[in-house]
Amino acid sequence: MFHSAALKLTMWYLAIIMALSIGLSVALYYVSNIELTKSANRTLDFYNIVFGPDDKGAFSNERLQQLSKDRAHLRNNLVLFNVGVLLVGGGASYALARRTLQPIEEALEAQKRFTGDASHELRTPLTAMQTEIEVALRSPSLSKKEATDLLKSNLEEVGKLRNLSEGLLILATASNNDLPKQKVLIKDAVEQAAQAVAKLAKSRKISIKTSARPIQVVGNHQQILNLLSILLDNAIKYSQPGGEVELTAKISDQQAIISVIDHGQGIEASDLPYIFERFYRADASRSKNHIEGYGLGLAIAKKIVDLHNGSIEVASTPNMGSTFIVKLPLTKHQPIDI
Ligand code: ADP
Image (tube, rainbow, N blue to C red; front, side, top):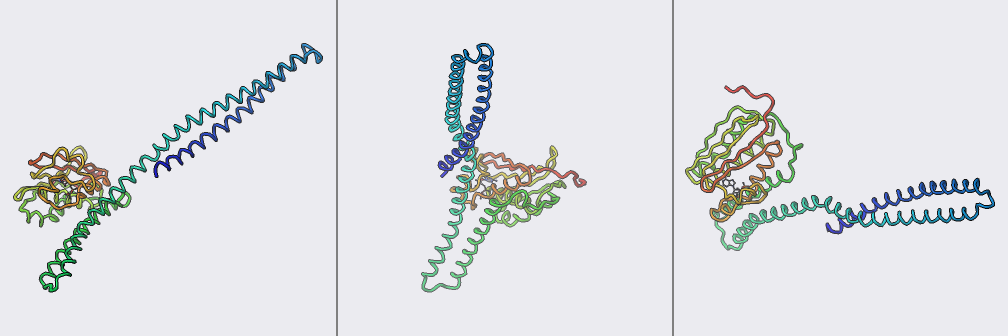
């Protein structure tokens, strides 16, 4: 598809180049022809004066032959020039067409991969639900308890599907202009995020320590809350029971610096470059420990940070823990720190 599009675009570029080149050549031919004719006429007038109208004949014929030779020479040169433009222009047009189409091709490829990955992830909970329902329907005497268990399990899968579709929606649609922004107090977001993951932390016997200065940024409170919740959620998920997770916020270099620190399983250096990619899950989280997730959390976190003109980075050592650092631009005036 892209090959034929590149050829079509090449044809268009080449048609434009050739139209310009032929147009200019025709104009050049006419202007040069006028000048050549003028020059020949001047010579003929000169012969007329020097040799008189009777004797100029032989010289005049010679000069007129010369004029038609010059014209033919000019035409040949212009035709050769246009053939050259056609060849060089054809090659250059093709290269330019490929270059123009390359980002579109890459974006389409990424879109295809995203859709493929998303439908693959959507299929897993749907298949689980389908199997459970089919088994239940085949059972001749489904007890009330079995039916309740089935519904509970289905509800869990529906919850997962909802989370997944919400994540996909943020990744697919949110742009800087869609995001209503106001002044956000990071301290509030930190406390609310810690609150949001408190249940998960408790179930995994992990304590959360927060310390935040009264820092203000321009942004979307809900999205910043989501960002911190994703990082805290991961810190808890990838820590050993009984561990500790820290969430701190301070100002440095005229930026809000938010750190989420855990002392959990850490991330292998080979995984680090990819963890912010959509659907990427390090092997350790996929297989060894069966920690639930779709590999979308950090991609969403990165998207939220980008929408706030900030940055996110990670430092991690396997079996020692990870530190995620988010930097966000501050508002002009900061609340007084007491
Ligand atoms: P998910 O947690 O759903 O797999 P994420 O996008 O949030 O997806 O994270 C991508 C991968 O990065 C995870 O699969 C995990 O391997 C790794 N990761 C993220 N946060 C941490 C962390 N705090 N400690 C160790 N590994 C982490």
